[in-house]
Image 1 (cartoon, rainbow, N blue to C red):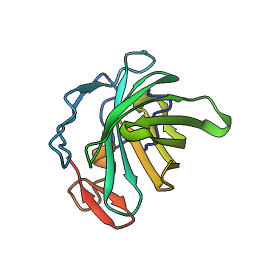
Image 2 (tube, rainbow, N blue to C red; image 1 turned 120 degrees about the horizontal axis):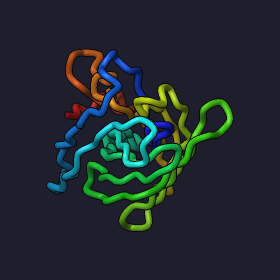
Image 3 (cartoon, rainbow, N blue to C red; image 1 turned 90 degrees about the horizontal axis):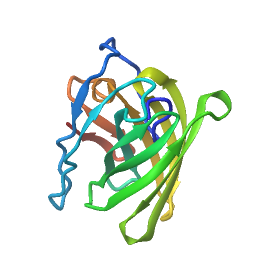
Image 4 (cartoon, rainbow, N blue to C red; image 1 turned 180 degrees about the vertical axis):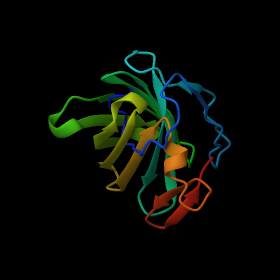
Length: 165
């Protein structure tokens, strides 16, 4: 997923590009928690990076993982407990890629993203869901570091920063 991860992005902050494990401990408002870890393995279809997104203007966010290389899958949860799965593909003009998600309750979302660093799965994306809400997406090996302007990781959503770990 390194090449083009669901809507997501970040600047790599000097961490090793070798395989690194990222545990995803966040919990949604209904108590669901992703129970997987990600290993960034450049050029390998089993590669995985974290995906984070702001959804609309009500403080809802997405927390998940993108797996694959050049094409792959995305899985995760919205902070309201909605379970989501989808696909992504890279290789578009100018380093663009596309991702589509389907979530519980017939919610869908489409994102176009721009690759920032293929080896770390760093992408930044924008999109819209089937309820008309805007999406701002980031992914990559160092996404939490990228989203830590004030020292603590936070999603820069429209309604204000949302702390994330």
